[in-house]
Length: 565
Image (cartoon, rainbow, N blue to C red; front, side, top):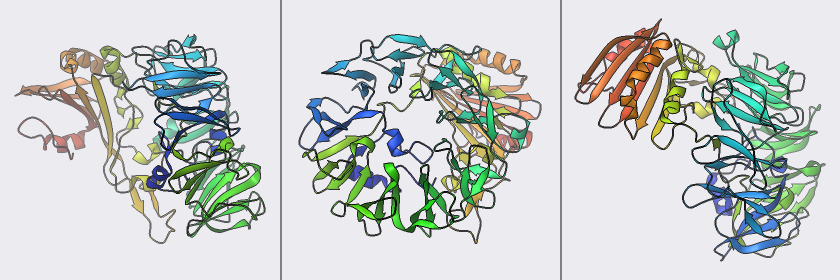
């Protein structure tokens, strides 16, 4: 999407101000004020000090220079940290900092919402604990499928879960399945609604996005003529773009309404206004209007509470405008300014950064070198339950007689792509995260098209020039497996049985100089397995008969295939 959490600033600029985040937050996610709404303490590293401190939303500094390691935001009385050994720990904040019992060596940890925190302990399934560390429930398999991942926190009292066969669903705060895992993709709930991608007969032509309520009932489908640009429902809308290139919003009834004021892009928005882009500059318009509310003359615009705006002029000057576009605060003395929700403004000053409250006053006289805006110390919550058998069984589950998982050989690859076309410019393949390994086995899945995924259309604006090539079809699904313990080789009998159960027949098998080759066939699909015993590396190719002939011609004298298939 065209607007990011950092208002289109480069990563170098973010690093200069000392903001630490595990991942960028695009317009697909919450606005800054929503993202930080539950946080009560902001972790800061004061210049000249070795350890971290906490800065409260009330402007009070606590536990100065006393926290070893970088903590996450304090949310509902809890925070997390990465340990030196790569594990994570969960902490609670009261009169003192306390390590949560039983949560000192976690594989992953989320953040606290409604008193519940998703975690994963070593060699265990994902579980949910309360703020004391007491396990409330363990997330059990659903219909025989293990839960591979879950969301970092509950939202609308539901937690997003993902099974080993790549299906998304939701459980409630008691650990019971509220919405069965059946979707190809899904987002967390917001305002009682969540976007899901559904399978079905229409999937042969395009992705079908649907919004559901917290009971799983359909609210509305996204029209075929519209492509979503944001996936999280906020202020009763999501941003979308029509096939003709018009950008606008899909409302709560599923109806698309173009923003007549622009075709370039839409940035942040609230219940009354939205940011829009014309000729590379940003302005503000009012919903239901056709004229500018604030003229498009700014390099960036960030929405603040109470319908005010943090803007950056060309040349770098920052200021806050009120709802009428009149200057309210002047930040021209700072080279960079970032809004941080309840904590006010982070401002880059000579020698470091400073914090100003919402009214632009400085309540903390400390110069700051680093600030953490992470809600959790880990990026994901992922199960560590997998035995070797479970690791490979998830692979077998996704192989089918038309491709791998939802990727069907011969289908347009564009139906599976969720980012903007420009993100795939020059690419002929994508690498979806479909398989989870462990400390011994790693997977890499690559879906390869028969041509470039994106094409450029002359005569269009820079924002809509690139579009997906609907003629780019899936040619090959390639799965690379690296196995430290060589369990793939010892488990080839299990592999053969699993493929036979999927309808594949062994056509040929050969072995020479530590490299083996097996060819299986089911209907019009062929499956090739190459294994290098020395490197302990297996490669699986799923492809049609015509492409299989091309690949066979490229097999080299050692029995392996070139990288540029």
